[in-house]
Length: 133
Image 1 (cartoon, rainbow, N blue to C red):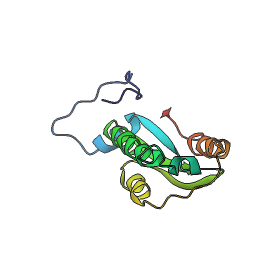
Image 2 (image 1 turned 45 degrees about the vertical axis):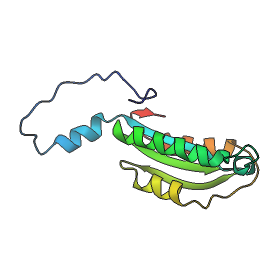
Image 3 (image 1 turned 120 degrees about the vertical axis):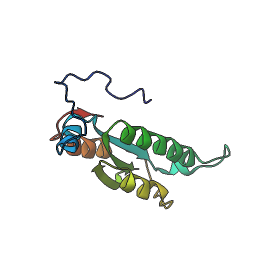
């Protein structure tokens, strides 16, 4: 179980067997929230002097984060960043878009400036309701 997700939920109970037409609507309403994963793809992440490039290890960790987010009903989006925002996948309820970006294998490189990526994440998460990570 992910240790970064919200653990306490306060809402009226909902029980119906078999599940009714509104189960999916209720799950969306009560889901975990939205998470944005910001992945550093700057030049230093491509360095392999210590063996495995840090970016390769980061992608493995990112996939784990995406899996945990989807498992706990969070929508998940990704921002690749270097000196600017290199690529973005908007939050979705499944992992397809995130995996597509992570599995692309063709990551840009460049300088290191986190600020534009943080601004973009804030812009994406700002208008959303619920838990935002």
